[in-house]
Image (tube, rainbow, N blue to C red; front, side):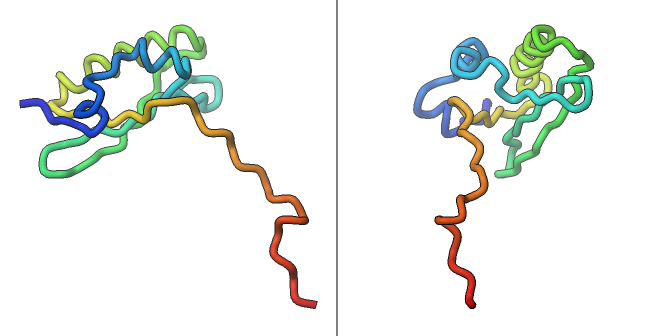
Length: 106
């Protein structure tokens, strides 16, 4: 019996192609010269596990292909459900300007 995640219960399963339309590099980061994937899985008993795997390639196109393949087969091979954030990345916060900082006691 598959585990149902909140994203699946409201929208149904979301394919890698749908995710790629919003952010082609979702769940990828470059560490040195190689691309890595990071995602979370839900396990039986309300447990979660963070997964980090090297995709063993410096080519971003090949990394995307390997990521999509891994995300498609991982739940069936491991008996778990993926927990993926869907949507574009939020802009990184920058340091607050001097006018927004709290005043320093004189």
